Image 1 (tube, rainbow, N blue to C red):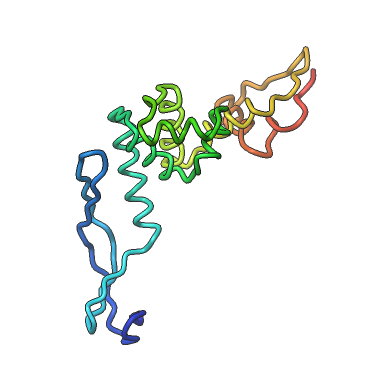
Image 2: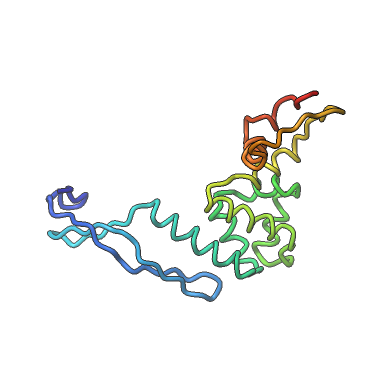
Length: 174
């Protein structure tokens, strides 16, 4: 049995807990795994479970196409980028991200599309969008003649865009 962080008694047991989050005028609810101390009543939810909840809320906002300042900021934070980092990926000054998030400017639909794509990729644990943006920021020279393989073409193509992969090294030459 686990020991409680507050009272130090060994009376902690797993429970499920309904939790909700208000974002962009919508209330999102989920059942989260938690632990409760039978002695002092303290309830603890693991940080990674809260992050997953936030990511699932971001997925729903992205799928619904909610494009306003609050949603844009929530999506950026859910993907784990600061204003400067997102600005760099979008190839815009960080101030632009701030303008969109404060509602000074309407959110650019292309920036929203990229951010939504980053959210979906993070949830699916496929960093392809981030990898594509990184390659665009640091393009490489492509040989005049390139040999490609058709065996497991989709799997190979996905691997070539990953960080540290062939997309970052010299291209194949026939």
